[in-house]
Length: 487
Picture 1 (cartoon, one colour):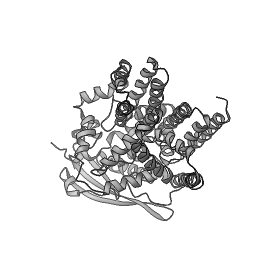
Picture 2: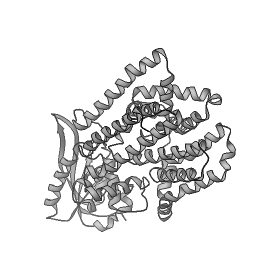
Picture 3: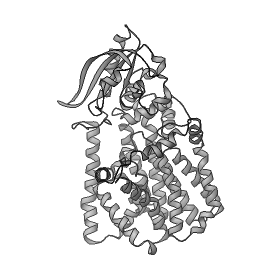
Picture 4: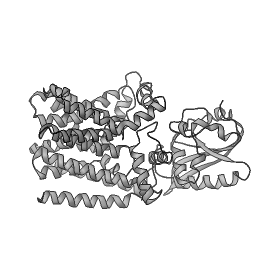
């Protein structure tokens, strides 16, 4: 533990933690962060879109630091430190070397996805931490003594991963696949593995209870609800996924990923069992979602847990690479990845290019100030609530205004509105006026459909968010009068 590489690991982990600490409060929340913060303003065993771990974490640290960007994100920084530590320890066991363990940590931190999820509050931050912990203790259980304590602790980590995001269900699938491919299928029926699976359900129990109480709404949304989005075979979503993973991983690691998938599939019968373990924790989720992308949209972060084990295999490949391959990785791949991370950071801190989607972090405080001004004026005539045609604008306005209890979404005009359907009985707002806001990045609005639920409306303003002389986005604001809730 006193080797130079362990000292380097501690040093760079500390430096990265300090840098990220200063970044936590440096930019507006993105809509997803505001949405998960809004979860914990309505405490529950679980929620419609996701299990509750991210929101519980936000709740703990906003109670300490306040309802600000720093408080919302602080727990994600701690998760990233824990993930780095587990990966280092796991790599040290795999390589029996702290040099390669340190390099695994470096590889992980040369990806954009890990840097982002170290400072942005999403369910992926706790998922990556608990997934890495599950991998670590399952590795110990399988290769270092078959001890009960390792199986049980691994099961607990798997359960907390599931309580972070449903993607963690791949953990059990990965293990079963590993037992089959490594010809140790009898372990599937071993008491220790079975007990480990049962232990997994302990942290996941609140999610199960919430679903039972709410007609299995979340389970149905993530299964049959997702299945409704499946279309005929096509390449559009596939190429979108390729582009997103090139960004998330950086080109270096994306090319290594494709290289190693081919290598391990073609020669799995002759590969060392420890390598098979990591291949089983990496490639199945990657391959699955790439196939799914031929029929439906796959979001860019769904694959991320599979990249943790991949980093160890990438280090092994780099260690054994000779000649041109080694030089390309060292002198082209590493600098390119580092430069992309720095560029990505600069774009966040100093917006110079509009991010043409609703997930942008720019403009929310300006919009909030405008809404506060309008609502204060309109409330003098009649009580006024706020709503939109999506969850993102209501979530942001809930965070940046004092009006979270009167901010709704599409449920105002009879459309499904995700978690907002569980928070608000719209009939309570009968007779109120409404401020309606939508963005040019989500313009699918039919004013006539909304007007069915009000007496009248008027257009108020097109609000432009301008940075450095460029229009980053537009918000369109309407005033609707005398709400008539859906029957």
